[in-house]
Image (cartoon, rainbow, N blue to C red; front, side, top):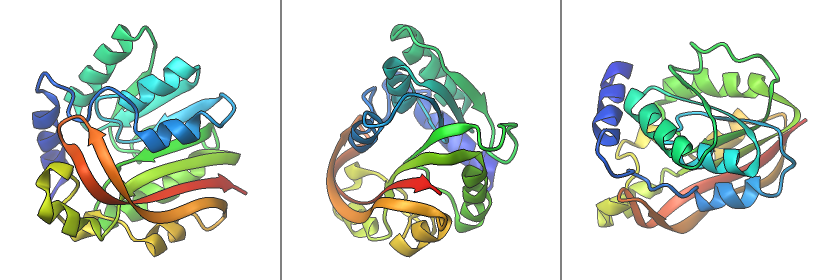
Length: 208
């Protein structure tokens, strides 16, 4: 599937009046971000902005991007409602001009890409994190397919290639101290598209 087709799919989902994944932050992201000193954070594939707005309300300097203009529009509406500001760009990480080693945290929350794009995007994420900076990541695991087949309301990709394995995640962050790397079952209640039990991989890592 080409990138424009992906963008069209997300625009179709995000142009609906309701927030697809709600307006509250991802629980794991919230829990881990609250532990860290304030700084500058990047949120890739941020969609409708729930995590970005949460971070901004805490006092973080928030940069976010997505390929969906409808996602950006909803994110900026949410930010305006919550009286915070976001720097939100449209495009792929390989197209955007963020400075190397300029972020204290990157929050990778349900970013699902084909393997070919993962191999392009994750080295770029690594370049953008400061030494001593953090990665907070929650994504669906390859075992999630069996959960999705039992309960489609839990959401997540139906293509095996878009999901993650523990070894794959570990390979993207080789020069990091792993404070947490696990595959676990979670009960999701995020909007209308993440409802029910799923299998996720969670990572908290510090760049050495």
